[in-house]
Length: 196
Image 1 (tube, one colour):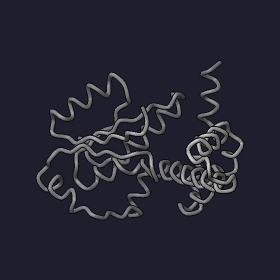
Image 2 (cartoon, one colour; image 1 turned 45 degrees about the vertical axis):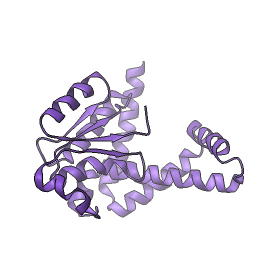
Image 3 (tube, one colour; image 1 turned 180 degrees about the horizontal axis):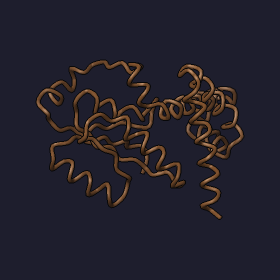
Image 4 (cartoon, helix red, strand yellow; image 1 turned 180 degrees about the vertical axis):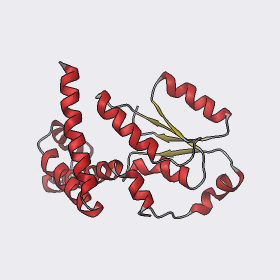
């Protein structure tokens, strides 16, 4: 039964993906933001976010908590839309790089580094950005429980890379081996450290 539910969820995501691809990118971003703000408010994750905000910010008014959560849903909607159009975002030069002098030595001399970040703004652009400026990179991702959606998203991520050396690996035993191999082959690594 679970596989049928996963397949139906996949069909829903695929339809949204096709719609996002048909619309001009700015329209699809606005549409995605609207979807996540509208439907996110009715999810159990929204209740969790409200409780977490009240716990972390006990003196914050309810209106401000709801504003913060709405902005989070907006960001998530934009991130998902941009993920589904990841290669196009790079092809249309929507990504602007600043302060590359901080990693110039890594690029010029093929030096290794561990890039540490969090799930902030659009975290999905980090691995392909580093790949596209000339850093061979490995990124660890948490697989999606739905195997059909997981495969779709992984293909989108892989298609955003231009180097044959750069890669994505699922969190777990495989990623441990892949990361050791990458380090031994002079590749750099991206870690998003705000999730276990």
